[in-house]
Amino acid sequence: MNRSHRHGAGSGCLGTMEVKSKFGAEFRRFSLERSKPGKFEEFYGLLQHVHKIPNVDVLVGYADIHGDLLPINNDDNYHKAVSTANPLLRIFIQKK
Image 1 (tube, helix red, strand yellow):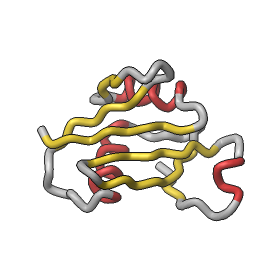
Image 2 (tube, helix red, strand yellow):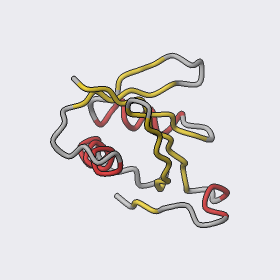
Image 3 (cartoon, helix red, strand yellow):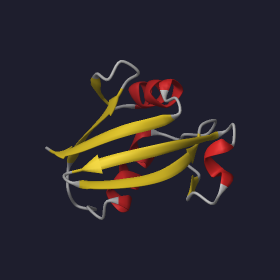
């Protein structure tokens, strides 16, 4: 999975997707290649790394286009979240 940080026009690229993740009161932003999102386990590890919670088991969810909170816990619903993110994928993380 390609993880890149925003540099100027990064959010304007067709293949780039902005991700905003929230864990507790902490927000993190980063971007991913929409065409190569990788697998859920890789994304889960990236979220743990970005939020500096490597040994914490968490639940991951996202806000869909209607504002409903839906789970991300496998490759299928991770790819669904990526495909419907426009322009931003809003991720919510909470401890199990």
